[in-house]
Image 1: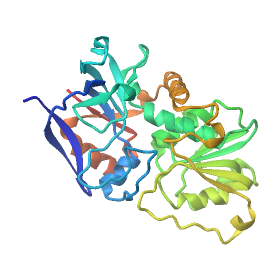
Image 2 (image 1 turned 180 degrees about the horizontal axis):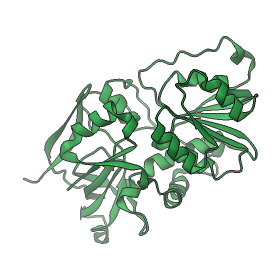
Image 3 (image 1 turned 180 degrees about the vertical axis):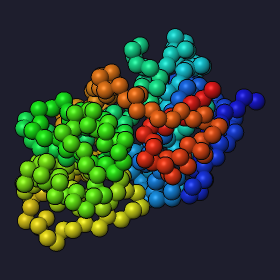
Length: 336
C-alpha cells in the first residue's frame, strides 16, 4: 500500500507526522507530490500555541471549525504525478500551487489547482497566499496620492504589504517591528523609517515621522492585540485602521474612551477569503490571483527564506518559529 506523511497539530506545542494511505482520486482530481510548503508564522502559530478560536466561517474552509488533531497549512507547491479519469493527462509533471495542509502527497480538485507560470520558481510560489493577502490589505486601505501610511508588523505579510505600498506615491510610509532584521528589510523595500514599537518613546517618534496629525491610514499586522492601541493613537482624525492580524483567542483591550470617541476613525476588518464589497463588481478572486503572480515576480519574496527544514523535522521548525522569532522570517518545509 502506498502511503503519505501528513503534518498534524495534536495539542498545544505538539505537532507530529502521521503515515496515511495515499488518497484515491475522484474523476476531476489529481495527485500532487509536494516539493515545498510555507509555514505561516501567524495563523499556524495560533494553532501551534493553542490560541485559535472555534469559529465556523463559510468563506474560509481551511480555518473553520478547527479542533485537535488537525492538519493545517495553506501554501503547498508540488508536481502532479497522477490524474483522475476526467483530468487531462498533460497535467502530469506540471508544477502547481494549492491551498492545502502540509503533506508529502495530496489529492486536489482541478478547481483548486493553480499552475505555476514558467518564470516563477516553486519556492517563490510558496509566497502566493501571503502575496494575495497583502494585495487584499492594500485594496482595503485604498491609498491616495500623498497620504501618510503606517504599517505595524513586518513579518512576511507586513513586508509584502510594505513592498506594495512603496509603489504608491505616498507622502510617508512608516513601519514598525520589534525585530531589527525585519526593520532593516523594511527600509530596503522603501519605508521612510522603521521603528521599534517596544521603545518607550515609540509613539512620539512615530508622530515625528508621520507629522503631528498622524497617519491617514494604518495597517495592523503584528499579531499583537495591544498594537491596535498604537494604531488608534497614531491615526489622524477621520483616518482608517485596517486590521489584518488574526488574534485568534487572544483578547484585544482597546482604549476607546479617550480621543477615539471623537476621532471618526474607521476600524476595518480585512481578510483574504472575501473581496471588499465595494470592489466585488469589478474584482474577483481570479483577477486578484493574477495580480499576485505579477507581484511575486516584482518583489521576489523568496529572498526572505531564512530556513529550509525537511518535513521529517517539522517539530523543530515550529519550535524555532516559537522560540527564536527574531532570527526567522520564512520557514519552508521541504520534501526530499
